[in-house]
Image (cartoon, rainbow, N blue to C red):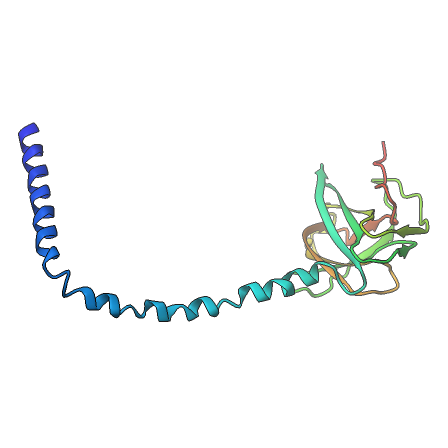
Length: 204
C-alpha cells in the first residue's frame, strides 16, 4: 500500500510539474490576458451598492413621528393564564406625557380586528389605575395585558389573535403592531392595566 501511495504521489507531482513546465511556455502568450482584464470595468458593481444609502431609511422607523415606540415583552403563561408586558419608550427629544390606559386591538393573521372585549384591570394582576406620567427622552412606562386560554363554548370555536395593535392612549394615536399569539379560547376578553413606571404586581 505504501508503494502504491508513493507511486500515486509521484505521478501527481510529475503531472503538476509537467503542467507548470507546459504552462510556463504560454505565459508569454497569456500576457494579453492581463490586458483583457475587464474585471476592472466590473467595478461599477461597487458603485451599484446603494444598500448603505438605504440604511438611514431602515433606522428612521425605529422612532415614529410621535416620538414613542411600543414593544411587547415575552408572555408569561401558566395553567391557561396569560400575562404580557408592553413598554412605551420615549425615543424622541422632548418630554412625553401619558395618563391612562393603552389602546389595544386584537388582530387576526390578516391584520383584521377580532371581536374582543377590552377591559380595564383583571383578576390576574393588580391595577391601581391611571397616574399622570412625564417621560423624559429614553424613559419608559409599562402596562400589562392579561387573558385566559379557556374554552367554555365549543359551538363558537376558539379565538386566536396573531397581532396586537397598540396605541399610547385609548382615545387614538398611530397604532403600532406587535406580533403575538393571543389565544383567548372562547372567552373573547382581554384585560389591560394603566401605564406605570413599574409594572403591576401579580395577585397572590
